[in-house]
Image (cartoon, rainbow, N blue to C red; front, side, top):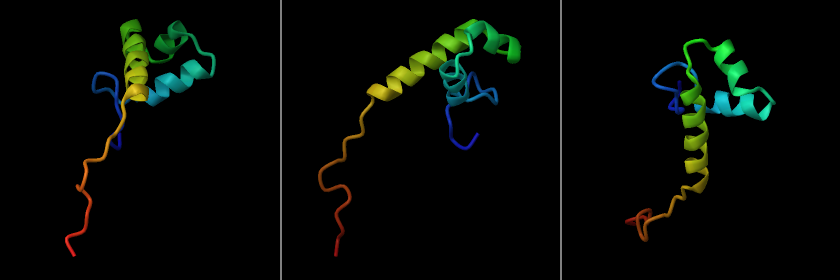
Length: 68
């Protein structure tokens, strides 16, 4: 899926789940639309998205300096 985080290796991305929730879909509606998902998958997608929001990239000093 282009390097995007997926649910249990299925072809459903975390972004898809978060987008559906943001659009007002309930977890039960999502599980009905994607019967191979479990309610816990929705909870894990939310936890992963929250974790990613808190993650920060810190550049290493001198890591990108040119040698010229």
